[in-house]
Image (cartoon, rainbow, N blue to C red):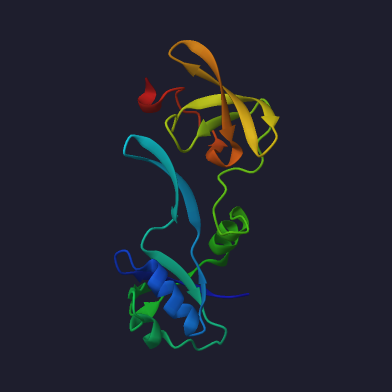
Length: 174
């Protein structure tokens, strides 16, 4: 089992740091997430790091050359406690890797079924809670939302849904 460590990257330099660490023989893991942002009055999907400014690294030998990490272009520092690199618990890395698809993008919830209460994680309806009415082709779900006092059906990509955490039907508890 690999031992993973956390690396902090310089601002907007995670791709550079990743490329340079991989060239030096480090295994690099950077989970990504799909976010919807408003840009020029339109909603645009972006793939961004799940932990902005951080990468997980592992080295195949028992004595990794940590001085190389701190001097790698794009890296700010290797996260350490008491002057020693702090390993990330293997369960955390395994859980993150299991949550990622083949492109390294975290899927918020893969096990959504009809009748489940879900929360929309991205887009204009972010944080709204609804109930899955049925599943549709192309990884979509028909979700029934309580919107402004009316039941409204909405087609949502399953990757944009997560299990509801007992929150209100509208953001901010309204």
